[in-house]
Image 1: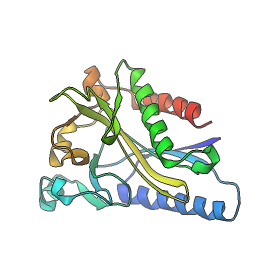
Image 2: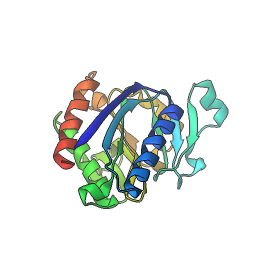
Image 3: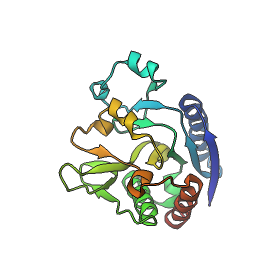
Image 4: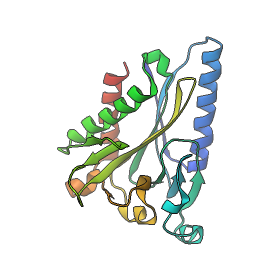
Length: 219
């Protein structure tokens, strides 16, 4: 059974600390053989760029001074993946899951998150795909010059408990991705559901679709 939490708009640093508390509490309860709750947290962040533990600061295309002028915060974080951007108009999901309760490993978990997003965007007539050399969800992944990412995924796991998660672009101002090489790529673009549909998309409606697929894949 899943527990649903929506933090609304929340600063990245605050969300990270709250996430870490849930993460550490889940590990503690699991170690003590106490019941754990698998949580799906939705939120949205003010402008922020995060660099994963294997990320390269060379993928930041502007100095920190420029980021501050644009009111963009910068954090080095303990998730997998490289550099990404979070901001208004983007649904960020932080599942705090005990993977052993679902009898799956980290690879299968990431595959299921990708599939949830692929099926969600399919509800809007968009064909999302995986690519072999990076996690996340892409459009036109094999077409040079047209491949673009609609959702990023970066996860940390300890004792099969997860934190961090995914970011799905809905009505995102994509110009902020010009500040970075998203996920370290220089030959691929980014997109959003709104851009692909050429209209504003109801984010609460998208959350409901995501939640339905979470129920299907993590029941």
